[in-house]
Image 1 (cartoon, rainbow, N blue to C red):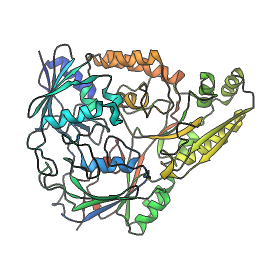
Image 2: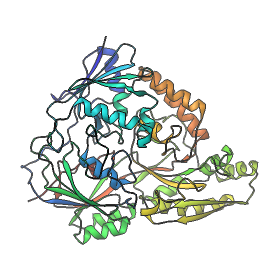
Image 3: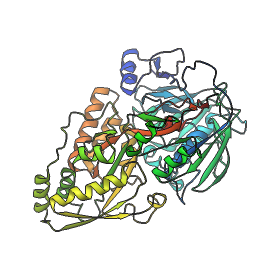
Image 4: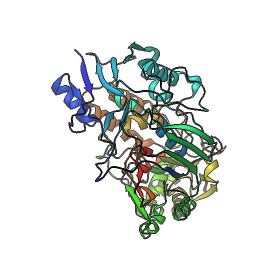
Length: 527
C-alpha cells in the first residue's frame, strides 16, 4: 500500500507535519499538503514595473551564487529569488508542496516516490524535469561539492538510490525508513539546480527572477523571469540586492531613499522606523536566534560543568530587554521554539549566578577564568548581547574578553569556530532541519563541534518513526540531552524586524526569514 501526499489547490486547510502524519494514519492514502497562499488578495490589481532595491547585511568577500553554500543572509536572499525547492514553508511555518505535486511511500517507509508539477520551466526556457531533481540531490550527496545540505541527506540515502522513473517522477530508496522526507526537502539549503550545472557564476533557476550581474560581496542584480510558473508574477521588473553590513547604515540608506526595503534592523532602531510616516515596520514573531556557542574542543568547555555555568550566569530577560529592545522572548538553550516537537515541557533554565559560581569552582575555576568571545554586529543584537554577557560574567568571577570584527569578515574570518566562545545567528528551522545542520556529526554548521552518542540514537529513532506521538517523545529525549550537556546558549528568540517605504506593497511578514522569506514575486510599488 502507498500513502499519497498531494498538493490540493482547491483550498483544504494547510497541514503541518503533525497533521500530515495524523491524516496519514487515518486515511491510509490520499494525504494532502495544501499549496500555501503566497500572495495577498489585493483591493485593486497590483501595479507592474519598477526595480526593488533591497539593503542587506551579512555579505562579504566569500559571498557565493552557489545556492548550496551560503555565507550569509545576502547569499540566501539571492538564492530565494533565483531557485525553488520541492517543498517549502509558508509565512506561518506550514509545509506545502512547491515544485513537488505529490509524495508517496511504500509500506515500510524506505522507498518514496515524488511526482513533480508539470509545465515548470527554467529561466532559459528548457523544461524542468525529474532528471534535474535527481541531479540536484546527487550533487548535494557528493561530499566534494561541500553542500550545506550534505549532512541532511547523506545519513538518509545514497546517490545511487535516487533515480527518475519518467519525466515527472523520482524514486528515492532510503537507507532506512524515514518519516520526514518532505520536511527535509523544504529545508532552506535544498534548492534545485538544472541537470549538468557545475558553474554558478551565471546561475539558472526556476524562481521569479533571473540573474543579470553581480559584484561579489557588494551587489546582485536580477530581472523578472517571463517563464515563472505563477501567472502574472512577478510584478516587479527586477530586484537589486545591495550589501550594507551595518544595521544603522541600512536604516540611513532607506531614510535617504537609496533603497526601498532593508532587512534585519536592530530592535533599538524599530521605533525610529515607526515614527517616520514615509516608512513602515515589518515585524514577525519567529524562532530566529542570535546566540552564542562554546567550543567543546577548546578549554575550558570540554568540561560540561563550565558549559552549564555559562548558561546559568546569563540573565536572559535583560538580554531580550536590552539586546533586542524587547522585540523577542527568552530562550531555554534549545532551538526551534515554533516546531510542534519543541520540548516545551523542559523547565526554563533560571538565572542563577550562585550555582554558576559553584559549578565553576567544582571545575577548578575559582575567580580566575579568562575567556575570549569572538563577536561582531553581523546580526540583530549580536554585539549588544556579547557585551551584556561579558558584563554579566563578572558577577561570577569570569573575565570575558571581546574580540570584535566587522560584519563582512565575521563568519569567513579565521577565528570563527577557533575561539572558545563565538556568536551565531540562526533563522527559523524545523527541528529536523536544525538537527541536520547544527548538530550532525561533521556538519560545518555544527559550530561548537558538539557530539553525543545518546543524542544521535534518539534522533535516529525519531526520524524512522511514523507515529507522531512516539516521534515527539524521541525528539524530546534528544532535546533533554541538549539542555543538560549542549554547547549553545540560546538566550532568546528575536522578532524579525525589517523596514520598507510605504509605497512598497505585497511583502507579507514570514516567521521563516526576514522580508517575507525574501520572496518578492508578490511585491509591487503602489501607484
